[in-house]
Image (cartoon, rainbow, N blue to C red; front, top):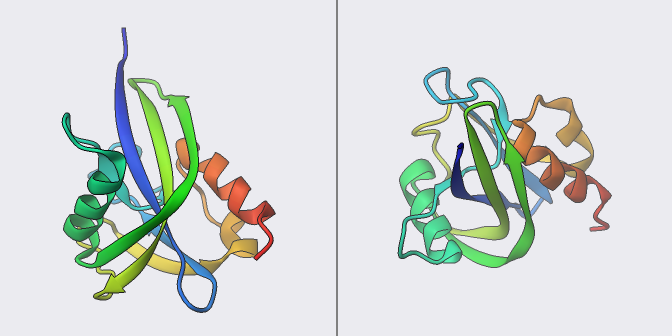
Length: 132
């Protein structure tokens, strides 16, 4: 039986209404695909605390969570992911690619130009449909 991993992802938008996209490094599982930054939720952690911690570790900046964006379960070849995307904003620092190969800011209408990790695609599709 495949293990289910609970993961949080940040949908971070800047003042120009661009969204932060992160390229998974060649060393990560599902390498060289784009995702929303975040990571695994620890045993006794709530999703918002987990996201704040993960963004601090991965991007070296502080965020404030805003609201739940979407919650999906996706089955990969070796594991199942429960991906919870949460809208957030940066309150201090500039994002740095500590674990990812690259970070870019993109307008909603351009999100489809990237090759996304399958679990992140539902969040991308929702963002593109949103009226801002």
